[in-house]
Length: 268
Image (cartoon, rainbow, N blue to C red; front, side, top):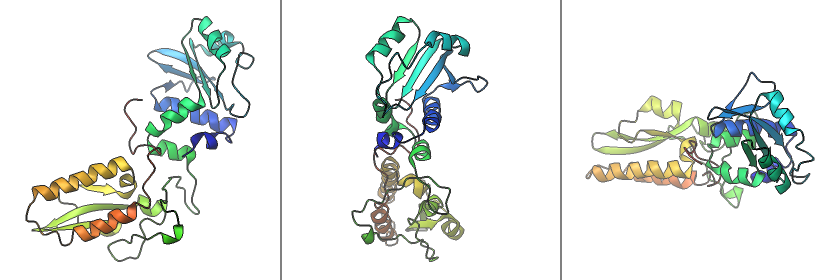
């Protein structure tokens, strides 16, 4: 995903909203009572300046003026320059000369960090709504020819393709079910499959939206392999065929490696 290409066409207000949430995602606390964009960390208050300058060139001292006066009015002791483009070395030098805490962030730095955010945050800013849906999730169709796409139907027989759109993906899951010495691999709409049986193994169940993240895919698949290995002699006739079908078809929607984690990274 080319984040900078999308950002380039954003309005100033959309860039500001993104920047405020971006900083909060990385540990900054916003002062909602302030008339200014003030965020704090480690007990220090920073005034943030958000400029979507990708088309205008680097932000310099002629743009960021009267910084000390602005800090005084905002009751802040530090400054954050959050820019979609670059910032001039002269601005960096001027800020350092003030002997105040300063954080200047460029669009390139932001684009490097974004893949480590959770996918919900990324989708909320870079996703696209589907027709008749409020969803903004990005689920990529990893097929060079969409005509060759193969559906994955709910196992209950209702005829729903659980990969067809974001809504179906959101309401679908997979799990393994053990009946005596036979193991079943089950997938489909949650309302359908959980009304028929429940996950009764140590592997639990996984949402389809979750397993479309490569990291979650690998973790859960490893758990299944470990369970099978630990239960030698179990009947797997109803396990491997559905699992192969499931894994083969979800690969058509697996998210790209730079589209964020299912859960946010703990550190950047």
